[in-house]
Length: 358
Image (tube, rainbow, N blue to C red):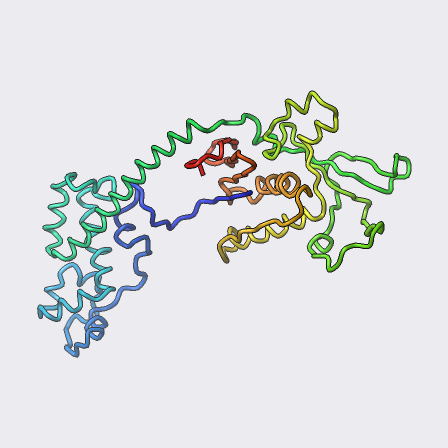
């Protein structure tokens, strides 16, 4: 089984580093266009003409009683959803920042930073607006604090459970290609193994199709260039073999191959083409979220070891910076491949698939 992960912004799961402006807007962007006072008066059904009707509401919101003297009319205008947003963005946030409260960490708990909070409350001079600000920031701070505490517990448990497999990331990333050719007259059975990836692999037209019927028995399809199959060799083995090449090294060459060599056929290339197209739509063109895939086939045909290992190799080579983590689940083991990021080298961590780890 595979899971891939990438970093995306816009999450409303707050941390102690979240900015107060983002919290008050619940992660939404600030308004692009600010309404005029005359538009707001029209929205509440007032035909009263004011001298300052062309003043923007981000200005009006600072001293509303000056621009809207009538108490009832002022309350109706300030109750508009747009005006409530303006009050948060253009009045509450600047006041919080002036008092040194730029993020949830500076806001603190109910008993923290009381003087600064009192000063903001007095400056707002609007009890309903203050209650909104206080409630939103308090809820977000408590959620972020709880999440941080839970994260420390999970991290502590995970750190105790993980095993870093030295060299495994490089072994898979730098797996060596070779290929099998047919039609070689001077070789046994007319076949030979050549190092490297062939200059001409199967075309998309050859692999991106679903057969409508089973091939006729004992009749081979024509193979361009004599390419029979590709082979990927990882010196330390693969997640499916639990990176356990020590036991195989004591056996025959064929036993060693079982641990290190992955056969890549046309069907595996077809699967990768489908996955790659979906990744491009998700991460490159930003068209849609990723699609979950299930590979169906008879037991023992190479879904996990063959296709799974090939997909892992290709995912580690996918567009740099687009993926952060690739997870490979096999039997009772979990292998997490962390791609290079922020100056840190790639690495592989192994965990037992026990409750609480996944």
